[in-house]
Structures are given as C-alpha cells and as structure tokens.
Image 1 (cartoon, rainbow, N blue to C red):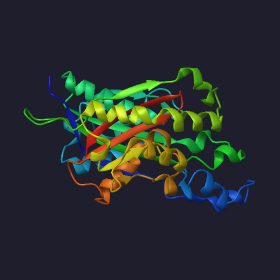
Image 2 (cartoon, rainbow, N blue to C red):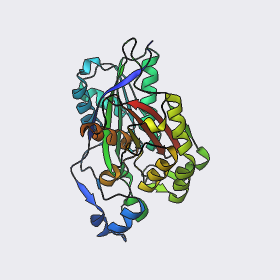
Image 3 (tube, rainbow, N blue to C red):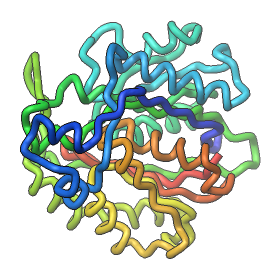
Length: 316
C-alpha cells in the first residue's frame, strides 16, 4: 500500500501530415473562417500508415525516456482509446511488447474523450492498492479511420495523436501528485455521440453535446478541485479536453481561475484527438516549460458516453 502516485514524466507524438481548414475546404462546403469561429481549430494531424498502437508506442517511449526509468521498471500499461480497430491483442500489450516491458498488467479502456483521466485514475488506484509501482498511462487515437471526410459537421473536428504519462508511487512522507478523481456520466444523453457498427463513422448531435458541456460541467470541475484541497484560483494551469474553444472558454468563466493561469488550447493546431487530447496538451505545456514543476494542474476530460472525469495533478 502507498499514499498515492505522481506523474514523473510525459511524452507525446503526432503524425507529420498536417491538414488545414483550407485543405478541407477543397472538398467540403466549408472555409477557414467558419471552422475557426465555431470550434477554434486551424489544423489537425492525420496519420498515414501509423496505427493507434504505433502512436501510443512513440509517445510512451518518449515519456519513459524522460522518466529515468527503464522498461523493466514498468509493471502496468493502461491505454485509453475509442478508435483502435483491432480488438485483440489490445493496444496495451502491443505497446508493452514493442517497448520490451515484461509481464505487466495491460488493458485498454474506452470512455472516449474522458479516457485519459479515467485511465490515470485507474492506474493511480492500482498504485495506491499496491498492485503497481510504476505505470504507463497512454491516450492514443486515430480518429481519421472513423471520420466521414464528406461530412462537414464532423470532418473539421478530429485529428490523430497520442500522449503518455509515467506514473510512480510516491515515497513515504511525500504528498501524492495525483488528486482524487471525480468521474461520472450522463448515459441518458449517450446517443449524442456514437461510433457504432463494424465499419463505423463518428456521428454527433453537436448541439446536445455543446449544451451539456457548457451548462453542466463547470460544477464538476470545481468539485475536482475541492476533492484535491485546491482552490481553482490556485491552479497554475487548466488542461481540458480539446473539443471546442467556446466550450473551454465557457467552463473557464465559471470555475474562477486565476487570470494568470494557463488554459491549454492545443486544439488550434491538433483538433479534437479524443482520449489523446488531455495528455497531448499537457505534454506540450511541460515540454515548453510553461508550468513550474510541482504546480497544481486541473485535468478534465469529457465527451462520448457522455462521460466526464478529472483530477488535479502536480506538474512533473
């Protein structure tokens, strides 16, 4: 048993192919100004020949290298994804095999856009229970595989990428670096965003998702801070799911952030990458050294299901 865990390192990966709004406008009835105004996205990355497992491995490899640990130290791999086409072997075991991690606990988790916070919480719980010491937690998505590129309401939204965290047990006497999770769902609204069938496309009732996100989520974000014993005004950064700038701005206005707090808006250059969006955005903030080590950061994912989850973490 241990008092908790902390994130010791992050890593991320994005494909090299950039698809701009102007690129999409060549085949869709849309334009750059329309997309930027409604969702805030300027471009996204699209994978050519890279799988969910490939991107997860690349991100995890970077996080592991930055952590100072080796593959032999990792005893748990958790991957959050809703776009993995292959069902078995799961993504987690594929990543473990490629990195040379021997005999870890390994499972995939699907709560769509809130997936990374769910996965981080489940790994934290495993560490608290003594079932793990060092875990790899990954969000990886290849949404281009399940995007209808003829549908302008969804084709402008999504991108591909992965983000990963190395999570370790805290030493005796050290405060945990991952706060208590608040997770939940609104299953009665689950049909508002669907990926169904054997050859699926993402289908979304955008107004239902938008209204839910802008009217119901801010109190949950505030409750996450309360559970961690942190006032929203004390946060150094807020890293929400990168769905829509208007949703993000609406939540920010209602939770009482310090004006100097950083609000991640990686969607401008990455689009909506579902379970990868939170770790991808957080990893970039850390890489650019925009958040001091040890500073409190609110992670908050929300989306398909409709599900939500968040926790306050200390920046590695």
